[in-house]
Image 1: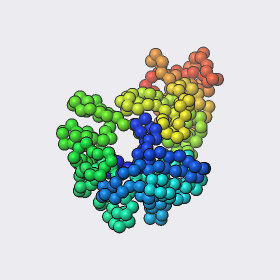
Image 2 (image 1 turned 90 degrees about the vertical axis):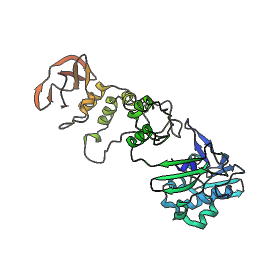
Image 3 (image 1 turned 180 degrees about the horizontal axis):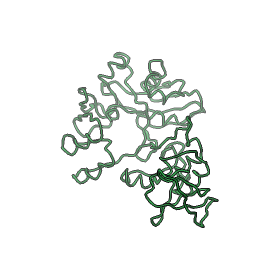
Image 4 (image 1 turned 60 degrees about the horizontal axis):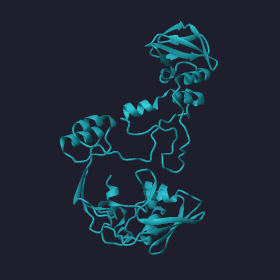
Length: 349
């Protein structure tokens, strides 16, 4: 959380997930591989060095060198061939192939003062950094950073100083907040929200352009190699309950990897609905050999105290003992319905 206070990029992601100008005034593409950015005038780095198109070009081009590629931010400019300052306030970015996401990618590239960076090098710069942000570093300590106002900031700070203290986990951060050791704590656990609110603290939520998901490993032999099993797990997972109970309702359920407001997001796409019975049928049809303890319970349907398993035959195993369930007259999708007593720890076909 320190870097946004010190550095800025040409563009930024707004609270609603849309792309916004920061150090760039505007941008457009001239052809399939040429983007042109108009730079804001009158901005300086915290060491007094002027920010302009030359500074932006120098930062981007540094990331394209062998020395710059070691930084993770290189992935944002991997399609860039070269950045050039046409004049003091006009930046040209050439790409190796058409890339409509360049303005968004550059939101992750924070611009550095080129003269100072060239003089001290990357290691010394990390100890005494300068940017165009509202604050500048006063002192680094182990697990602690003291920031003061940037006297040249084009967006002046509203307070004189900030002290950042590292805390190892959300529990420690919550305790520091409740004890008064800190005034603001970031990245708290959702389960801590009620306790924090009861103490009279205010919770502010920030939008993140990210999707949290479970990924299925299909590279090794397992039931998950069958598409029907993966679909069944989706049908059997109540995402709305997870959001409400575990995440305190502060986010929304989705069925796609692109976050709302980002490139590739499809507002018309609907996630698989909660249909445990349909998921159970898919599991049966996949003809799983052996037991599938972790996922079969999610494919069961409980109605009025009875647990139903959709199966293609009368035989099934329950718990640690074998038995035969009595099929009812109900059929759905060619799968007979069997009922067993509630409380069965697992079921396998």
